[in-house]
Image 1 (cartoon, rainbow, N blue to C red):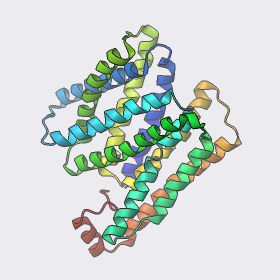
Image 2: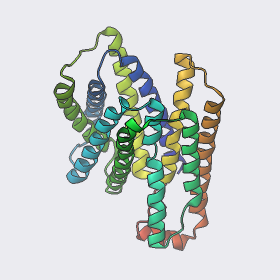
Image 3: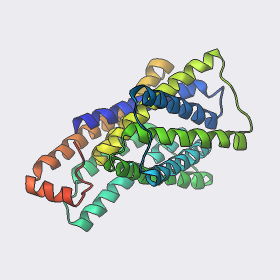
Image 4: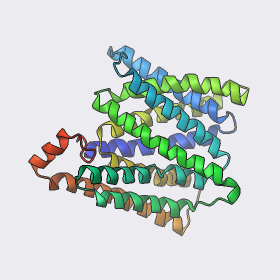
Length: 309
């Protein structure tokens, strides 16, 4: 379990560093262009790894990959649209409601299957989300209601995306192959969307090229780590540890952008940290609290409450 905690934290840190690079590139490229550059970097990097290691990109899970890729691209496109319609704090907070949808999903499954409900982990997720709300202090007026609902739809789409990633993991698809096909799909989709919606395409100069390369590097590392965590780890734990992206982002803002957080920001980050620790404790306690026979029984029924260690 702890190795998957490491992958979840590495993903959160990588995506936070990627966001910092995107911030540096915003004056040079449109959002869809950045999606393309990020995706093409990941595609070429993993292709090089495949070629050097002699791996195979052949898969028997074509339908599974297609579902994951369509869901992922839809999520990204809607998210980019809402970025221009809502305050950043509101946008990020609403997209993190995926964890709350996941908690409700797990409670429903546990009740239907008459299995132990991980109330401690669910409480930790809600605590972590509360920390994000305090940290970001979201707000929107009545004219932004439609955009807010669209942002919530991103969180719901992401829930189905994570379940699809989990299904690919159970089918023994390696995390790099899942990311590889997603990167190809996003490269083609974002390139078409750039010309169709933004009407122009910009080549990087020497300065912006450095930030683009760093963005691609951190994005690739983040996607590989995130996919590995969701595909093979405990989904509740990974979901809660994903909240750590917010404190990571705040630290980056302090160090590189000279941002000075206020009291509520520190309170929010502390709650997120506590939530991550509690979720780790509760999910591990649930695992050890079950007898070997009960654990075997749950494994046979493919319980979502116990994932691979």
